[in-house]
Length: 350
Ligand SMILES: NC(=O)c1ccc[n+]([C@@H]2O[C@H](COP(=O)([O-])OP(=O)(O)OC[C@H]3O[C@@H](n4cnc5c(N)ncnc54)[C@H](O)[C@@H]3O)[C@@H](O)[C@H]2O)c1
Ligand SMILES: [Zn+2]
Ligand SMILES: [Zn+2]
Image (cartoon, rainbow, N blue to C red; front, top):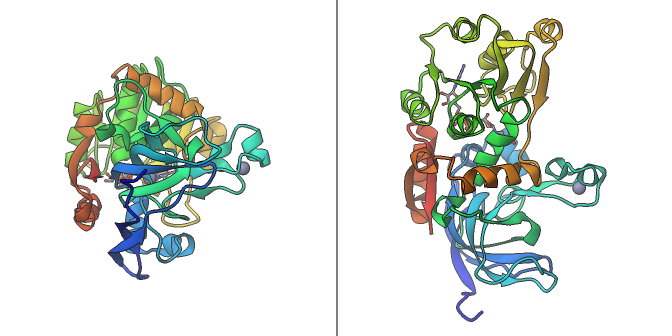
């Protein structure tokens, strides 16, 4: 198409230090045979982007210098590769950022989200803090009915939340959500939408997010001034909840999940912890017969199917959760705001 420019202004990580991003003139990428070229509509800021901003050890090991980052994104298809039959120009899509080989044992058993050769769009390769990006067509997911492009970039964290919740029972179940960052807040809302009979939302001291949890449907909200384990037990006949989900990254919260999940219950952990070795009360896991599961990404595609069912039915309150939007030119300010924690989801628009 003639109106696709040759170059664009894109945010690139150019220095191995805190910040270290520059808005630089870059080539608009060309589609490969199995890819689509997308004009970015909006990209949301994720905890991963904060790691890359701070340039911690994980970021230094994973992100090549010069990468255009950003992986929670959506937009409109403006060009398609020669082998693509699933998309056409003008299609509205959002990105699944786990790039899979579709040919390894994990992909073949239906676990492409943990592909043996897996890469993350916007982390290991160029992403979407830029006006255009390319992506394999299979990763460009069409929007469900009732979802506008303005809100479509959040399907990555919403999908994380739903994948975590569905590691245990939700419909008719008692659920505790530990950590009320954007993903925990999505989990509060999704748990209610999926029919949980009691949702207990727990943060440490972030009052903004605790208030948001209440608005998003939490039945009980707890924080550092509460005896968290005792409160959860007292709301569940002293048994503990059926399904505990850990989104805080705090080892203390992880212990709390184990002490406050019912015998034979489910503990689903999406969090990433600061230290490789985290102490856990192992004997309680054993004697309480708990199912403890690590969660990564979104199931491709059952998590997306469940998410689209909820979104089409208008059951997820994204508007309340997206607390701030700004121009992509203000990306550094967006990161500062996300780092402050005084927000729900922060989205940059193109
Ligand atoms: N496995 C994956 O695929 C995947 C994907 C994305 C994010 N993550 C991880 O998921 C987690 C959630 O991400 P996010 O961006 O929503 O969260 P975040 O880091 O923005 O928020 C964490 C929240 O936990 C709260 N908290 C701190 N200590 C607590 C405690 N002891 N008890 C309860 N709450 C406490 C904080 O106040 C904060 O509001 C992070 O650890 C992130 O690294 C994992
Ligand atoms: Zn993310
Ligand atoms: Zn694979």
